[in-house]
Image (tube, rainbow, N blue to C red; front, side, top):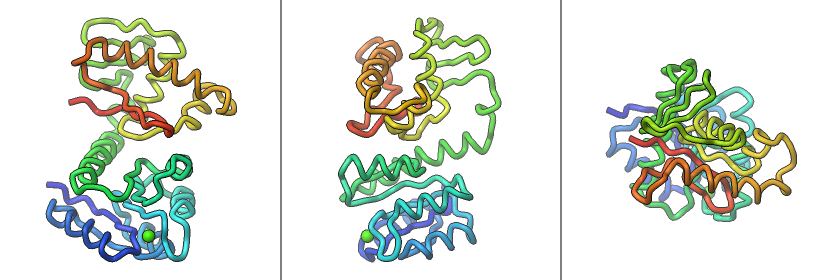
Length: 233
Ligand code: CA
């Protein structure tokens, strides 16, 4: 049922084979590119649905590949990297990557990230929610016109800051947003002074969204990196 076309950018043949074998077994179509330049060329000629991108490539840095692709395409890019430093993840996400996986990764993890990205893509392509005045995700509902948010029948009592944060997360549902990105969108200023405040606002917002321990977790924390709103079934 998948049939999405995945561009696999990876110079390491064993890792590339693991990925392509997994994709094949789960009914994805794929293309491979062993270098940054061939990845950019392939992205522009074959118009893949999703790019899986290794950062350590022989010719170009993966982050440079993201920057160049982003000048003309919104193609979802999932970074797969051995670099586990937060700074590297942040750099890739800020350059325009949608998600990241750290090597070594499990096949299940890879498939889960692909599913998240496909759902996000389907939503964007349908355009239904983008043009709609109401956002829904599980029991969460945002009525943009009224400036109100609800959990089930219950109106959420949010401060303007929390409401803005919630709308930003909702607009980017499924995507990891870095601290820098969120702070620039919400405060419009430099991030060093605001990351502690962001953490506090996010903690209270999460508590309001998940009032009991068994409530679904709408907002996922990526420690040292940022936050993501999850699609809740
Ligand atoms: Ca590599």
